[in-house]
Image 1: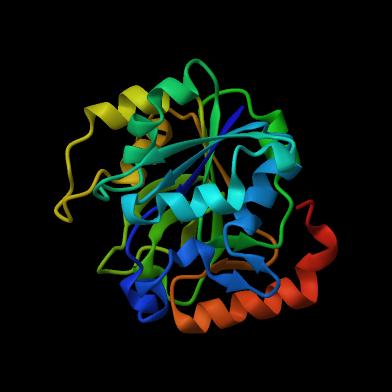
Image 2: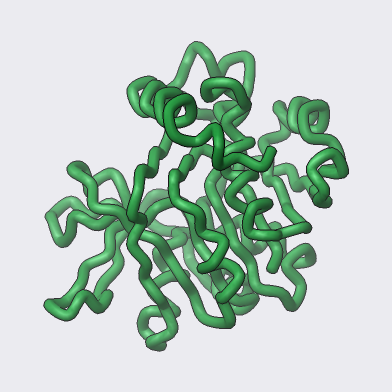
Length: 241
């Protein structure tokens, strides 16, 4: 299993703080934000991790994280000159992923749950993790039938189809690279991660798991404050780095 942390983007919603540093390097209680997704991967035993960064902040990540030796892992870095959507991470990481399975986590997603068992037991296909939210229009959402079987996935639907948002943690086998390369850009001009999920769903190879405890997408000042409180009150004894 290989790991990817997507940590690029301009994070305009967190200006002026992100005028001087990357969103994922902002402090969340007593650690930089990126330490929390790193914990998710390292705790699951993943030793090789690709970190995708924007060009203007690449040096900051190298200064903070180095080779990964300090954490008992190996970091590889790729510079994303222009954000092209989440699925682009698999194209950029083609050589890194090679013939292995891959777990990707977004650098601003903070979870209370431990996903080690799900990651270690993964064999093939795809796996996504969903959480019931009050504002599903902000996310990719998964619709279930009466038997709680996923039947539809849609990115930021304008009309309600479900309250279950797809969180920023994804596990795929290495077919995700070729799937991503075959995608066409959406109306937003991006390669959408939901299109990869939909590929596996249509083949009956997508597993959807529920996030039981807190999940925060720390992309706004309000959610960043929530992340601070979660990290302080509930995560300190669960961290390995």
